[in-house]
Each structure stands twice: as structure tokens, then as C-alpha cells.
Image (tube, rainbow, N blue to C red; front, side, top):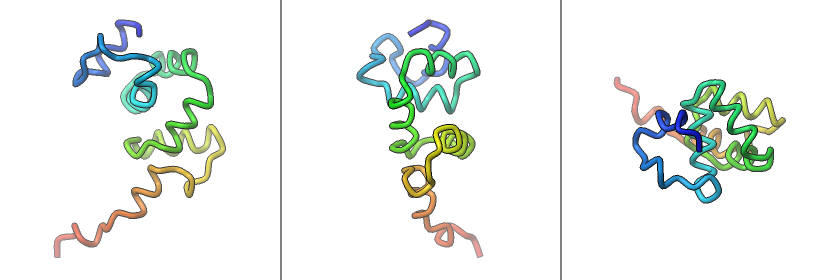
Length: 97
């Protein structure tokens, strides 16, 4: 991976990241934390199938990224782990009375 992307993996041993083995982690992190150049790198490095896999299976997306990927790849909320997780949260439990 380009050294310019290291700043997005501050909590990871950057040198040990493998773009094949860690592709889900890398794609999600760069979509959520990266800038436009980082996202361009993702789109040039990974195929659409890999990105859609992350969109469907990752629970760790930000709301904006989940919505962007949903629209970009014509996905339904019902098939995305992010939306299933949000829907399953019991916000009433955390509400302070």
C-alpha cells in the first residue's frame, strides 16, 4: 500500500497489512476515514465485488458511508449488516429519563 495511506491506520501495524488478506478492513477503513485520493486507490486496487462485499457485511461503517455505498451499488438496507445492526439497537435502553 502507498505510504500516504499510513495515516489512516494509526492503530495498526501498517507494514503488516496485506491487501488481499486484510481487504475488508482496508476498504472499510479507507472509505470511512480516507480522503478522495484514498477512495480512488481503493477503487483502483479492489474490484466492485470486493467493495460490495464490504458494503453488505461490514457493521463498522459510518452512516454516510453506508448510505453512499448503498446508493452507489444499488443495495437494499435489508441486505446490509450496518442497517441490521442499527435497527437491532435498543435506543430506549440508553435513554435517560
